[in-house]
Image 1: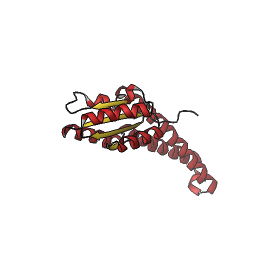
Image 2: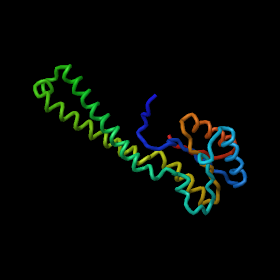
Image 3: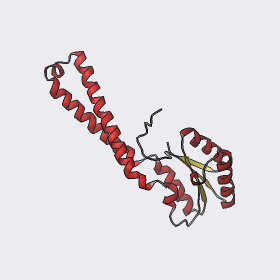
Image 4: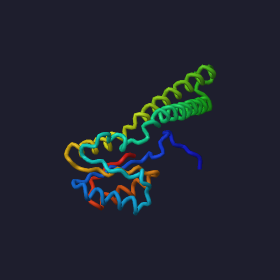
Length: 176
């Protein structure tokens, strides 16, 4: 199946599980990695006072520029195609303005479809689903708690990690 992701991240699915005790968090991290066969870079511990927690939360920060470009290009093109499809539907319905000014109508609909796609690309680039995940980890650090962060490669792996860490007593937050 071809890659249809609109981001350039290898791990689009992230889980943060906050534990009040560092030892319990360390044990949970080792257990989730072992149970789900996760690689060493997929499971991270973020302790209070961590000097650079962002590197563990979003290790693919260099890829954000690639994500911005990929999201805008793919969604911009998709928006243009959607605009052309809307034109085709309206033309087939016999809407007088569309039929009488077909080229102008096509250009306008393709243009605005492209703009809508670019705006959606901007929203994807902002990654609003990551806010809760990042804030939960930062709040835990301020309160002296330890967070287990899992960078899953699929939604299924994310769900399994979240359920596993929740069963170990972690307060779980995840991205979409």
